[in-house]
Length: 165
Image (cartoon, rainbow, N blue to C red; front, side):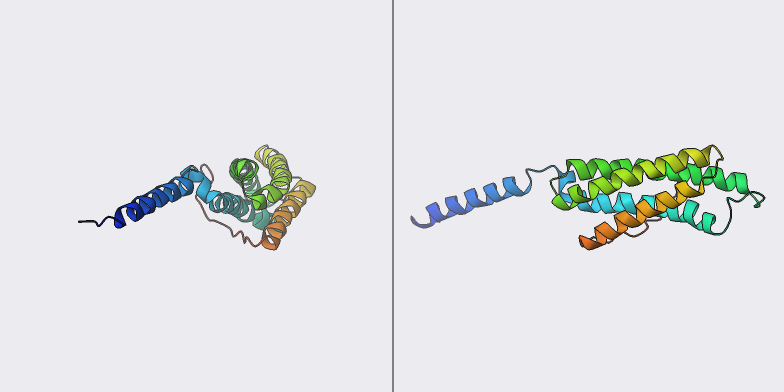
């Protein structure tokens, strides 16, 4: 049985708990993890580019006369377009999030998305554009540098890419 003076304290504690819960969970669940989702989406794009474009490019897989060149170009194109899809998701998060850090990275993601889309279309059409790949890699490095300066490290996130393997 509650004594006379404990009832008001209980009511205050209950009201404070309710207000705290409403404040904490007034954001949609997805908004609580914007940075995590952003890092994951960009990490998937990093992986797709590094694994299917940059590494084969450095090893000469796209050069005329290279064995399985056409397959390498098509796979790189599909992987890059998949990366563009993940960058669009990250870009949307960056522009709609309330995080100033993500807003700061939004411009770099816009540039990276455009560079990847151009490379992806060219590679998918079996057109090798060395400058485009170098530009995409530079934009990736820019996003990586900016995110590290802001205290967020983005790592490659390995995923199975549809149609590529």
